Image (cartoon, one colour):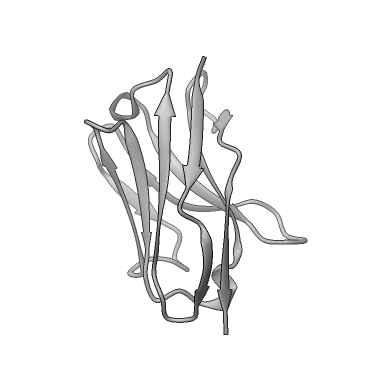
Length: 117
């Protein structure tokens, strides 16, 4: 059974940092494109960042330069380091992968990030 479990969310002041983790089981993260998304209340789910099998990374313009996606193959975990956080970054953050198709079809349950001003 494939599972993606996010952790590391919390409450932080503007300008602060958090590191989110996505621990995978039932799949090997180095063999799939892995991504982070977020959804704020009343808004649609938004792409944040992705890392390819060859470790190429891509970011949404809003987080570029502030967030870094990485993975630890030994721990089978993907990370999202978030620096210089802004209140607008407040959202439920999800980890996802393209396991069965060319779309983001496998999701974790999410971890809440709240940035206070």
